[in-house]
Structure formats: structure tokens, C-alpha cells
Length: 205
Image (cartoon, rainbow, N blue to C red):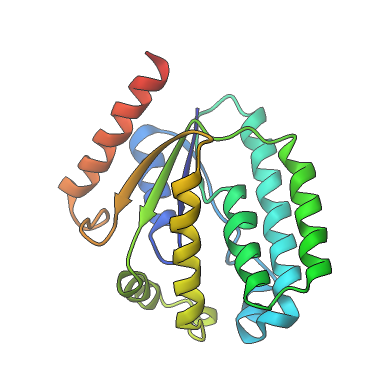
């Protein structure tokens, strides 16, 4: 079984991935953030490093998909390959940080990869307002995120809302992080688990 967690920067994907892996005994696959050699440079100069960053993430995510497809264990994944293309790369192009030829090259590569990609069995979307996302980004204190522009975060949030509304690849659970403290409140985490259990039962009943 393949469970994927999606959502904007700072929504708590990694935290929930760890908690679900521990709760269910699933293997966890995390987004390659800390080891990404382009991320710090990207936040300093988005136009110069956008293409490099997106290619790195796309390749890493495709490797994860291959690992998940070949694994005999249930897996919870931190962010999907769909988000790389439909949200982050598209947003950078529309914002003028990706040149047309680079964006088209990227999309051609993504389209080729899609012929080898199976969607997750269940997608968990973590939805949050900008104020909630900013508070959580500041709380985790990654130095390279200090210079993140607010309009960048806002445009990503809009992209996420548009994408999740059209997403039909698998079942979706939407979790509002504005009203739930999954890490700090056991009852809130139990609520999330109940939603997942209900959907998992539906998948295999």
C-alpha cells in the first residue's frame, strides 16, 4: 500500500509522515530537503537556480517511486511527484523564474516519467492558511528558508487548492492544519488515524 502526504511548505508533511510510519509500522520515504545541493542557492536567487532545483527534486521523486513500486512493504511518502510538476515547476514558470525552453524541457521529462508512475492508493492533503504555514516555517528554523518571499508561499497555496480540486488519481483525505495540532494533541492525531483507517478499509473491502 502506498500512502502519500501532500501540502505546501511548512504544512507538517514530514512530521505526519514520521508519526504515521511509527503508528502503522509503515516504511517512510522523505523529501530530499537537507541534502538538496541547490535549495539554499535557490532561495538566494530563484531565477538562476529554479531549473536545477526542480530537476533534482523530479529525479529524486522518480527514484522514490521506483523504490516504492518494488517494495513489498506499505509506504508513506512525504510529497508526491505530481506536486513537483503541477505546483512548484508551474508556479516558477508563471512567476518568471523558469524560462519557457527550460519549463518545456522539464515537462517533457515529467511526461515520460509518468508512463512509469502509479498513483498512490491514498493521498492525504494538509491544508493550511498562510499565517499557519509561516508560523510553522519559523518554528522549525531552517536557515535557507529565512528569505522565502510571502508572495511565493501564497502563489503555491493557490496552486495547491487548484490542483487538489482537480485531482482524481486516487482517494483523498483533506486535513485542515489550522484547527488541528497533530503533533501536540493526541486526540487530533487519533482523528487523522480514524480518517485513514476508514479509507484503507474502503480500499480493500
